[in-house]
Image (tube, rainbow, N blue to C red; front, top):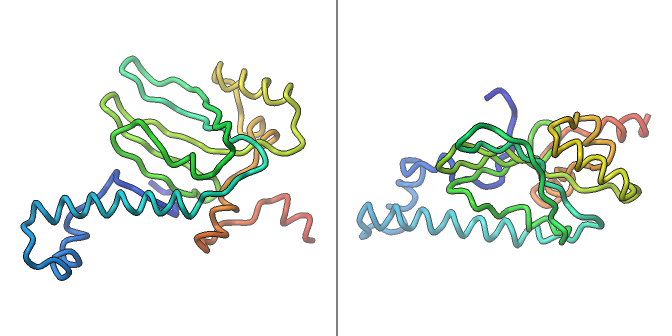
Length: 181
């Protein structure tokens, strides 16, 4: 994939070979199976750490925009995280997941399950949007008619909040860059 990803957490492509040397040096008497179990446990702990670090209350609810792989094809959809807490983005019912910030500063997730892959985009509603605007966006999402412009008109990216915690570099939003000129 050409897209630059700043991976926050993943078990989608976890590889024992990447962990083996460090685990063997720290736990020399463990069998390979015990080391593999420890790798999964440690990686799971990292997800809990991520949730703790991103326990940030936002001023509005978060919307998850999904491209869902089902047994009978792909469908679009959305879900609202009413809590508005950033940590609540990092849960899934899928078998494997990878959360990352993309080159546009958007929080995204690729999640795998028995029927295929789901792709999620997480955005927070802007403070000044009306219920009518929110309902209009939800309707467009439901019918698969929403454009990037429709989404950015009503929501804002989450990467800026994440970048403050993890000191990652993401491009400035165009509107902010114009305002600074």
